[in-house]
Amino acid sequence: MIEMICKDNNGRSFARIGGANATVDLFAVPGVPNCFGLTSTNAEPQTTSSPLTMALISKWLENCLDSHPKCTHEGDPTLPTRVLDVGGISSKSVKVVETCGGNGRYLCLSYCWGKSEFIKTTRKNLDDHKIAIQFDSLPQVFQDTIEIARTLGIRYVWIDALCILQNDEQDWEAESKIMADIYHRSYLTVAAASAGSVDENCFSATRDTIITGPVQSLFRPHFPYQAEETNECFPMRTRAWTYQERLLAPRVLYISRQEVLWECFEEKNCECGFSTWYFGDVVDKSGFYDKCLQPAQEDYMLQNMWRQLVMEYSALNLSFPADKLPALSALANTIFDRRGGGYAAGLWIDTLVLDLCWSVTNTYETKCDFPWRAPTWSWASIDSPIYFHIVRYYQQEIGEHRIHAEVREVYCPRQGSNRTGRVVAGSYIALNCELMPVQQKNIGMQAGSLDLISILDGRTENDAIGEMFFIPLYSSDDTLSGIIVTPSANSTDNQFERVGFAYFVCDSQTEAFVNRGAGKRLIKLI
View (cartoon, rainbow, N blue to C red):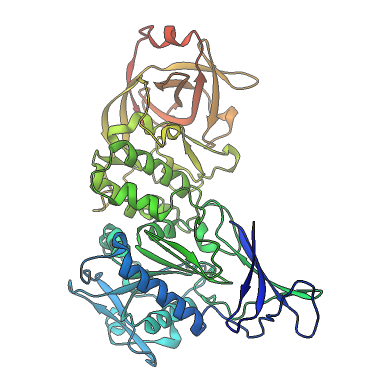
């Protein structure tokens, strides 16, 4: 916690108490004496759309353009397939423009759709939208975003609902493939951080203070410590689609209820000055740039960065369960371009045995009551925060370890043209491995002489799973890790489904176990 005495625009004093989670400004109450030396009354009501705030945004943007080489593109980038031409300050309408590969600066919007219906572009109304969309017909978040673009002199705006043809699988598939480029090439991305739906105000109407005795206080919450933390002040940050948007965009302007915040690849800032060092994500924009966007990175850095991204992303919410893989595909494609190795339903083929070692963080909160979208061996098959146990080695290459299973074949065809998007039912891994029968105990499970620490995925009740086996996958100096599987009820004896993760803390018997030369068999994991 940091305390300081500050001056307002008129040179009058107020107190500021700041920390990583929030900032509180303390002002004098008009006509009421105080013993703290406070003279500023914060009398003028402010909004996050005030001229002073817009001037600060312009200053941040100008500073980034002039002095941040990581954030700057050479020349104007290629425009997305479609953009909105927002016209001038007083324009009563906007229109959809098909850019035909032209160049220009454009602003992106990152936001929560919400549950209410609002205007969207479809193949049926595209021609009408190319003529004009009345400004008053747009939901509030769209109107506020367009006002920001006009104030900053940005002619084009990209909003997914208006620039991608809705309910058109072919257009959606084509645009989802280039989502990484759309956000990464943006001049600025506006994040409506406090709006839970398109109908809410992007800006806050007033910044209300609370009067306590001779002091009035203004509370400014900062971003949650983790991306997945629920925070009513920042509903946008709980949504899965917005996660990749804010990481890929070179500059993001977050508009919260009490202030605006800035984050680019080289700097973080806010109006109160106390969010400058930490926004809360385990993976922040600067770290993402250094490990994923810089050329010639070590493979292990990209591998571990991906696991960190998935762990954060897995805790976020989706309106449509089928979007689990597509909503992360822009990040996946970005990393694919740099590491290769093949991609299968959220895991990388060249590190597949290690990447199978994930677990849910809470079995009882796992959701899987939705149509099939991924094989059971993929974290994308469930809705739950997950943890990669190999991530302990995040900051360095994996130390001495042994692999106990061999991937013979990966069959995971994609549903469309997006190489990291949706996959087709029937996907499987052919795995040459040992199957160790598992016995359930009062506490935990046992495979042979190994007392397993097990974490079931939560797809079915524990007592309804039936016969189970432990597949050893890899061992390090102190741990043997693997997965729990069960024979598939609707297929042959050679096919199994994953139902959990398990590990064994190694002791003096471990070397004898891993070297005992047990028989292996080829199975299909579906």
